[in-house]
Amino acid sequence: MPRWLPPFLLIALALLLTLPVLALAASWLQLDAVALDILREMARTVLPEYTATTLVLCLSVGLGVAVVGMATASAVTLFQFPGRRHFEWALLLPLAMPAYVVAYAYTDFLQFSGPLQVWLRETFELRGRVFPEVRNTPGAVWVFIFSLYPYVYLLARTALAERAAQLMEAARLLGAPLSRRIREVALPLARPAVAAGVALALMETLADFGVASYFGIQTFTAGVYKAWLVMDNRLAAAQMATVLLATVGLLLWLEHRAQRRMRFAALRGQRGGSAEAQPVPLHGARALLAVLVCVLPIVFGFVLPVLFMLRPLIGGWDELPWDMFVQWSKNSVWLAGLSALLATTLALALAFALRTRPGPLTRGVVQLTGLGYAVPGAVIVVGILLPVGWVQAVRPETSVGYWITATVLGIVWAYLVRFTAVALQSVQSGYARVPASLDDSARMLGTTGLGLAWRVHAPLLKRSTAAAALLVFVDVMKELPATLVLRPFNSDTLAVVAYQLARDERLGEAALPALTLVLVGLWPVILLSRTLRQR
Image (cartoon, rainbow, N blue to C red; front, top):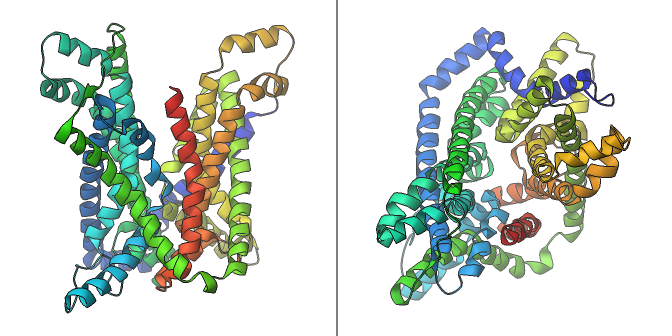
């Protein structure tokens, strides 16, 4: 192990990033009669609804993102039609839209008092509600599908472009028609990628709080907050969070399994010849159908929500709280910048330690760090506040509660638990492109330790480090559940303010912070689009 990163620091880092999960597991040892009674009452009353709603939501979203993501990936990869090159990057635009912003936009435009229903009633002299209620489970399914399908689209497009090309060409030379090539060659090879993308989309769905709370949907995440904040019982909230964490862990295992199958499919595809399958030209109605397949997800997931939010923003431009907006922006940028700096620093240290001394301890810490992004924000909050409550119960005079809940310490801790994995993945991808022979050459010339990291690795990792910091910055800007509970006093962020204003039906004022988050979210989408075009 490098001298500058001794084992005890690695162990301390592992504890820092896994303490929330360990605290949830330990909560089962702290059950008392009150918590047990609450759990029994919840199991009799609300838990069946939480379970049923979450299950329906996950099944519907999983099926929807699989269909939309696979259809769009197949269209831009296997066929040639007008606008195909533009759709390749435009289909990523919904990644810039937080799901709760999409929910606010559709609600504002389609609700009973919204402009569309008002116009229809006045124009056609209709009475009552023209459209069904938007804020319900079907509405949430719609929002999640068109916000999260890019996870499936990205992985499926990569699988079809890089792994199915040779086999598709071989099947064509053997006389297989296009429909059979797609059904028996392309789709089976892309199936692991679709499964991995669906697992990622479902993890985001389970971690969501903004859409579920705003639409009044009784999901497990909403139940965790109610048990903690309404029923005022941290142990009952911890047990519910444990169930949610176990579900996310199952999805993470399925995603890793699908990723392994994707690598196996890649090896199979690389054994073929060098011939590549050319996109099949489409004309007439087929070309129009392919264009519609690509246009509709972009319209529903990005264009319409932006237009819906621009309407109240422009209409109430003179009444917008610009002074407060500046303060909200400063708070958001401060928290996001600090978290991005710390997360990227931790990621660089872990990646360097894994490269230079890949022992069991280092690999274990890296694997534990990688689990953080799969943990929902609601679970992290409960896992952080549980130990605080235990410490205060034993030592009432301690000020640990103040430092965790009234300063940036608690919220930055939550961000590091959740988003260090994002930075680590980007840095590791950069290290994968640095040949190990460079390290050997540097050591032969007398450069070791931090000198190796600073003089050899740092210049080669500039883009990966910048990408890691950018991704963490944007994720922190959009994070809602953890920020809502752990933010310091008088330090509301853009995400929190957008949620609070929308909850109070002040969507005109919510449009400004919401659209600001969308603009910030466009940066990683642009970066990702440029990376895909360079391949």
